[in-house]
Length: 112
Length: 114
Image (cartoon, rainbow over all chains, first blue to last red; front, side, top):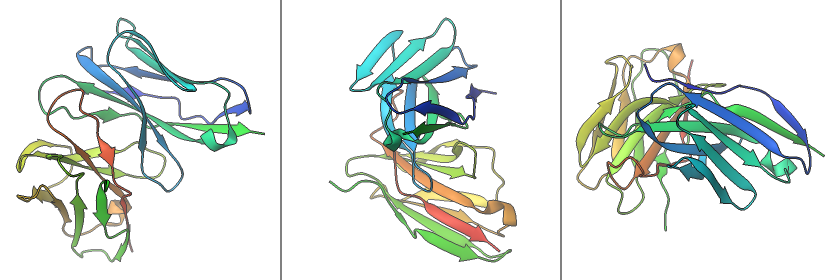
């Protein structure tokens, strides 16, 4: 059973702070990792994808991957109230049907 | 370019009824996946189709079925609806069956079973 674990939160940070969202996964064969943002009542939208160990930066967002520790994180710098949403971690193994497994999501609240 | 389109956006049914949800993928995408998302949970995988063939099936009862058409659009059918089927049903499309392919989600269909 492939599992993706996230703390459901809520994670509350002040505006301008760094928000750190974490995700662990059980399948060592996982090759692709995705972070989606989901506003209440809306569908998930992709923020970042990462495939190799290390950091990947895109604007205020940085994804960090450590395959040895089976850990992927998302950092949001200079957090804004508009970043308040649920952040879903998705993990996909290579081979087979390439079906991603989603975590339950972490709720982030950025307060002014 | 049009994104993933789903219809209808909202649906109210009663227990025991049947429902059909529809999805049109992004132009050029050949893979469609269906997910069920209940409040407070991440999307749960139901089906994946690629080039009109079923590539994967999640842990859902046989009341759930799907198909993909030659134009790559897809339908999700649910028979004998139960109260527990109330959820947001998401369709996602991707270009193909590679691990790095990114899935893009439609706006979803919110199904309420009374």
